[in-house]
Amino acid sequence: MFSASDVKELREKTGAGMMDCKKALDACEGNMDKAIDWLREKGIAKAAKKESRIAAEGITEGISNENDAIIFEVNCETDFVTKNEKFHDLVKELKDALIGSSAKNEEEANDVKLADGKTIAERIVEATATIGEKISFRRFQRITKNDDEVFGVYSHMGGKITAIVVIKGAVDTDVARDVAMQVCAMNPVAVNSDQVPADMVEHEKDMIKAEIKNDPKNASKSDEILDKMATGRLSKFYKENCLVEQAFIKDSSLTVGNYVKNNGGEVISMVRIAVGEGIEKKQENFAEEVAAQMRGN
Image (cartoon, rainbow, N blue to C red; front, side, top):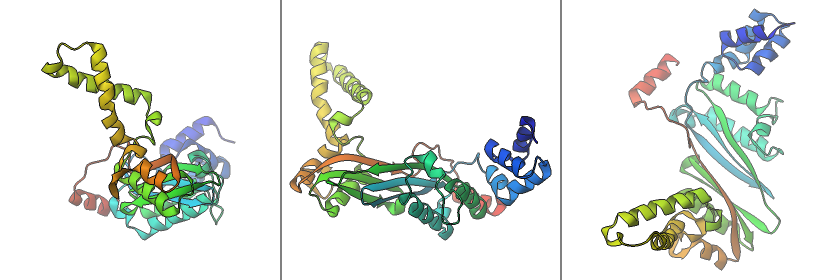
């Protein structure tokens, strides 16, 4: 009915993805012009033109339900859209569908069906066309807990950062929420020192040893002594970067670990995501951004 070269040609003409081009040609019995119209009607061709754009703004969300919790990120291009009612409606629609699904990862989440029968992946394409900016469903994770554990969920700055923690023991949700707030605010790299990646610890030790060695007072010390000194100074690194060793933001006389322990619990795990992490953001001034919006780019 159609060949691989037809798929390639349609992709070049519309900028749509390979699988979408195959679907279009299949639906239109190989007719190229009809396939182009099919993609345009579904907003896929229009959305594809925006694929090269940088979507580094957006919202993170987290929600728990009995022994399941989900955390995800939806991105857009500008902060204007994060205040758009359609964008917020989209995020809520995804949240409601995802918490009721069995999706465990981003790939499965994209296939989750919404109330009208369309998948999340299809809704994202629609949203890109209707909102007028590149919209992307970037990250999704499901967290599960046991019956003797509690979730803490907290979103900061209107969803710019979201954290979910799991705490074991007779802890109320307010305590768990406080710990999730700590994770949002202080961005620990791990729950405890045992969970800090070994390469990160070694790198920190190397940096500390270099600082110690560069101090003229330590010029005559052996590598063995320098290593012991570096290990001792690692305690400060752990206090700053391990959740249970951090000073509790609501009472600095306590560590987070002590705060949770005093309430009959133990921190088991944490997840934290912030909007745009790892995305190289495009630098635009306000006037240029407004002009770009008016041009429809």
